[in-house]
Length: 279
Image (cartoon, rainbow, N blue to C red; front, side, top):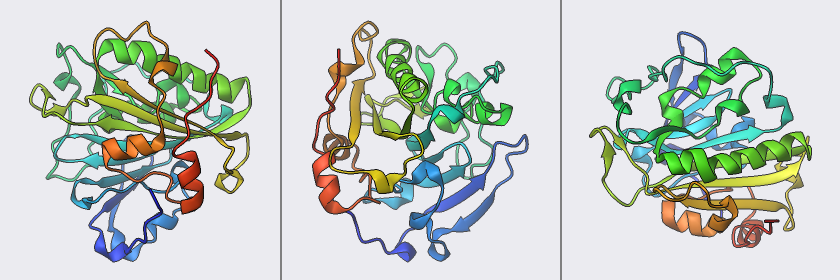
């Protein structure tokens, strides 16, 4: 979509600025006095995605990622993050229960680890645990349940994981810098234990640059990966490339405008292009 003209004061978005400290300390601030769309947070370098209804977008800004939380679905609308080889380290995977995000307002339902237990759905990371292994706090942040969506095991452990592994190879083997946005598309009202909305599909958008490059380096020839994967059984052994689509199609399905920090002309080119890949 074309870049919108934002009137900051017209939005009712609330921001949480927090690191993954044990106490999850945060400061709340109305967006009307803050230039959130000009944020220098590398995780939203592409721009903060917005739709036509800001009342279901509660923004959480962390060192490790930025997300929009939907208090009606009890799930993220989208999660945005930066990824290169420097984010990978030797920190072991956090092995305790997934973490209730206590930084949410009192009015929000706070998803618990047990909400997923015996539900038939995995606790599916948006920002992968392995992608934040530089420090203990980085890795722990990926286990906050605001970074999690219900994913069928065949999605989470199959094609979704295959694409995550491909991103890891891009960073480690090809020295690429990635700017990633992921989330769910919800067309039904199905929920895990009447609590967490289950996405019908999960999407991921990946802008691929060389290590150290920023969005100023994006051109009409920049590689962009966009996928929309069904959240169903039977897809575990398929190739992730089967689900390549365009950003524009994801925008139409999700209702969100992505890559808003790029010019409208550039968006029109790269948002309508399919990723060319090797099988």
